[in-house]
Image (cartoon, rainbow, N blue to C red):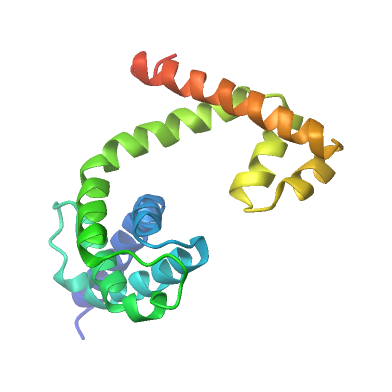
Length: 181
């Protein structure tokens, strides 16, 4: 192997790592729209990541990596449909195809919403932010979120309702202002 080839391989590996890091959230979000369970989507993300690594030499630099990766994710979902056939919620392939197409067209809007939500979460009181993140990001129940923030169940439910409204209004305002609010 020539020194240039080794350097080229290293550069390509760095490019792959950068692209995967940059687009992993979008790929996961796309997968989660196609399967009924978060854990299944996480498993599929791992499978998709392996295929991306295996096929990265087929990716054309300068093209849309997220679209290419989501296409791989789509085919992983199709290949895994028997696994999900035992689930309580199973979608017809036409429904999966329609959702996949819609998710692909909404990817940029979803990224904008995610960025706005991240900014709005930072504006919350730390105790409220912990309640929301424990409940939703950590996929814990309201019982755990209430315990961690020292609230009763009733108070936690009321706080979550209030916080969801605040976050909705904040995100809407951020998007209307072009993300600069």
